[in-house]
Image 1 (cartoon, rainbow, N blue to C red):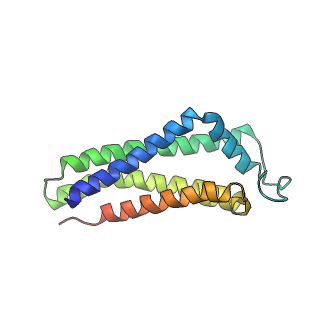
Image 2: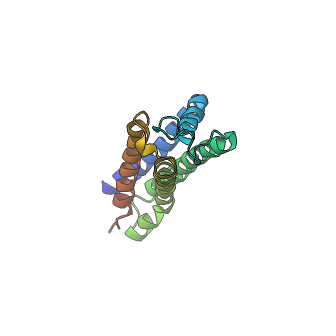
Length: 161
């Protein structure tokens, strides 16, 4: 039963990546707008003229591509990983443990994207922690996602006997 649950949890991370990127594409203007609000530091008190603030479209598009690429990669790796785990669910422990690699790699990509994009770049570089308008919405979601994906990765990564 635990093997099935581990495969389903990795599948759920794949679903998160694919549903998230679908939302980014459906509301691409909103994706770019959120990135511009962050990089321009427009919602951070007294920081609109800070040397780090930028509305450079290249920076904003690179941010969008980083997010979209991270979610697509997460979705693909986790979907393949979940399929591998499902196929190996009745195999011996060594085979099942080996089947986790792609799914765990997908979780690592998601964790990297969330930590780098939101914690290092948005929160630390662009001071999003000081934005009453975006702090809870953006950083709160990133923390939730990272927490759940991290817990899933730790649980799935535990050796099966």
